Length: 123
Image (cartoon, rainbow, N blue to C red; front, top):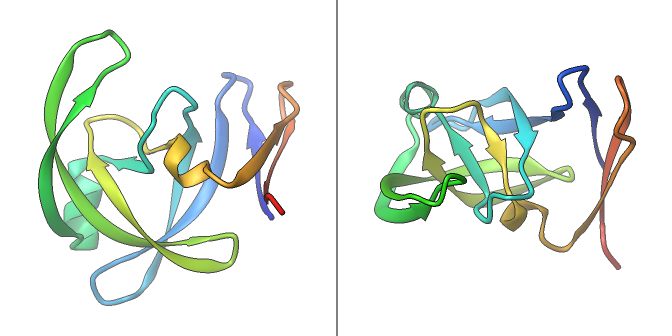
């Protein structure tokens, strides 16, 4: 199970271990964004610091309805205690966890200050 907390700013925060190019784990605090259909976004500065591998450019639809092109990298994250290779969108924003990473899991949130977040694999 993956756990997190709801902040007083109404953000659903989960800590995620992301591997750098050498395989070392780095803790990344990310916000769950159910409106994001990808796996994970990271700022370009974090992607560069981790030395993630560039894979391609891709079109993304933003929350305001506009679309843009972004670089997509590959990373290994620890998800539910297991390593998982995922695409990472470069975005000038805080790290976001999207629905593709959550797929196959149940998300339960107590949406209050300090509320618990539980993410469990579906049977």
